[in-house]
Structures are given as structure tokens and as C-alpha cells.
Length: 248
Ligand code: CUA
Image (tube, rainbow, N blue to C red; front, side, top):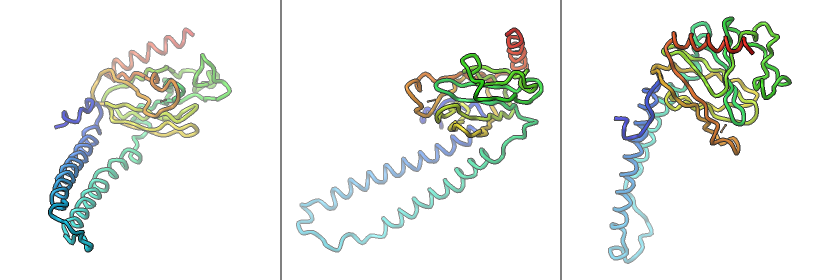
């Protein structure tokens, strides 16, 4: 049913729900398109000059147009109130608790995605704008006890499958947009704000992080990679990152 829309694979728990809504909206648009098209053709023939040599100043009096408009409005309200608003409420209100979720910070910049994992202590180290440099794009303070074990990457986000993921999203410079198409996740990254984004990936694989907001000349190459892996693979990857970090 979804193939005709050409959507990417569904790789998160809420993907099917969003796609369902997309399909309903497309059906409505198809009906409107065909309906309006047919009406347009009817009007061209019905009110042609040959059949109506004199203008009618009273205009058409049919009730059909009004009732159709009301019907379309009702369907749109059902889509909005019945599907869109509840789905969005779940996205922004029902955040997973930090104890059960994998929490990760993602900080966008022109033109890369900086990722910060809290490390074994589960606490993010302090970041400070004055410490930002080419080697330390996050401005992470390694002297902070919470920051000593933090793991950072650039353009590479690894996450375990089937666990709630809580991304704390922000930006260093301009507005970017964090887009994970297969996860059906898209959220603007706004400087000065830390916006929570959550999803449950349920399909291991390699995906892309796309920047979905025109953010400058390098927007086209602001591309990161998302790897969804088993918990064991994720733990092994994390251990490797920690080892590399310790050698630096
Ligand atoms: Cu960042 Cu487009």
C-alpha cells in the first residue's frame, strides 16, 4: 500500500503511524484532485458561450458546492484532530524517562553533526563556548568529572536497536534540521535551545542523518551517518570509542 508513495523503509516504532496518516492525506488529495478536475471540465462544457449567449446575472444556485466544502472541511478536521494532533502530542509530551532511554546530545554546526555520549557515568560533561576549537568542536570540558568519560563523534551516530532513544538537539550557529528519514524523525535544531527528540529504532542497518533546512553554502554536504545495531554491537563499538578516547 505504501510503495506507490515511494517512502523510505520504516525503521522506527512510530513510522507506521505517520505513514498511515500520510496515506490518508494523499487519498484525500487524490479525491479532491479528481473531483475538482471533473468539476472544471463540467463547467467548461455547461457554461460554454454557445449554450449561454446572454450572461446570467443571478449566478448558479446549487447547494452541492457548499455541502462538498463542508464535507472536505470535516474530513480535514478529522485528520487533524484524530491523527495529526495526537501523534504530535506523543512525540513532544510522552518522552521516555532518562533512566530507560539512551540519551545522546546532538549539536549541529555548519556543516556537521557533533554527537556527545555521556559515557559510563551517564552524565554529560560541561560544555563551554570558550573551549570550542577545531579539535574540540563541542567545547567539552575534559577537566569536569562528568566529562572525562564522555564519548564524542562527528557525523556518526550509533544507537542500539529496540530501545527508546532520547536525542537532545541543539545548534551552534544557525537553524539546521535533524532529519532521519527511515526513523520518520525531523526536527529543527535551533541555537540557544535544547530540543528533545525521541524514537525507538526497530530495524538494524545503516542510515543517513540529513540536514533538512537550508543552512548555508555547505548545506548539501551536511550529511551524517546513523548506525542502528544490536545492543552487543553497540556496547562493543562504545568500548572501542572509549579506548580511542583514552589514547588521545
Ligand atoms: Cu545544516 Cu542544512
